[in-house]
Image (cartoon, rainbow, N blue to C red):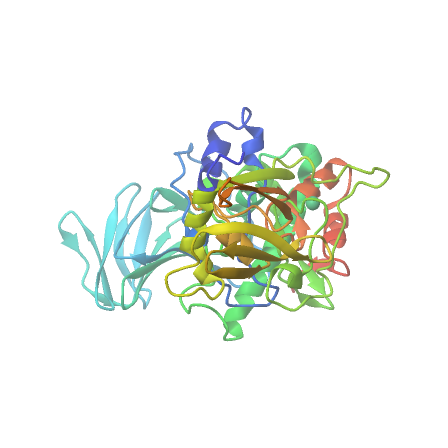
Length: 462
Ligand SMILES: [Zn+2]
């Protein structure tokens, strides 16, 4: 599993559903996620990387009605592209393109593709030499029927596709009801398909993802949104979203069974962080992030009662792992990434001589790692460690739940750093593989959520 690039997982899931079940494991989620309620999450280019286009999937049956909407939340605005220069839009059926005042500019059908061009803050739609007049700000594609889809970048989307002009380009945003959005999120976040005895884990995932979404929607009303044009990104920076092409029956059913349900603590909806694999015990936020703890985010053991060495998430392909970096590879990683996380003298840290764990958090994760190099010792904290000890390909470290061994050459230089670890992800909140293990053991979605988010209750959005 570790050799499968994350972005291709959905592709593998589609092509090799039965053969590569392990590739469909819960994926790393929201690696740079902040604590609940925190609005500005630090992000890196790696977090914002878009998944490659998904392969074509058979058209959905036209007789299938659009999914139900839940009461209590406005439509969500998901950014599909934030730095495009234009956009090519089409639809699976008849569609129209509207201007900012909701006047119809284009009536079109099926596969006809219209290119949205930008001139300053103005946009127009063009096809085969025919253009609309320039109009201010926003163009919106809507299908004539709710069971048809808009198409952007070879992927199908429910609801509307909105193109917004900015000073530097266009932002492409999918605007749709929360329940429709979740159908394109849950299968990518929990992996799958999941078997019947894993349904409770998928339901728990749907409720956690809905809670996160509702908190993000509230952020814009609170004036703390990252961007006025959208509520969320479609990447791991928020929740991975693949539109209608990502939808699968097992996850659609879980979204439908939990319609409108969110997680609350003391009455307020909470943004419920989750991760792939805790590796034995979940973490409290301040063990990993620079943030205050929350009463519903406590350390939770994933040990199976009555056993000494079995854990609910030990079915994860990354329950335990080893990463080995040569001295040269570690030098390169330190050269590329260290200065983003600690103060490094001009000219760099020089060759790395060793690395030692200075302190651990209460759950056993590395709190501080000291990197000894030619030009000094450099201290890294918490999740930052994962962004420095990258592979030559740039993949971050699976978790901070690890120990290190070093091998030196005869001249004292570092030959190799071996990192042996457990788990995958930040370790806070719900452990997705643990949820799957608990579902297999017969636990309900509510029981799973009550375990990973102590003191919370499940209730309707409003
Ligand atoms: Zn776990």
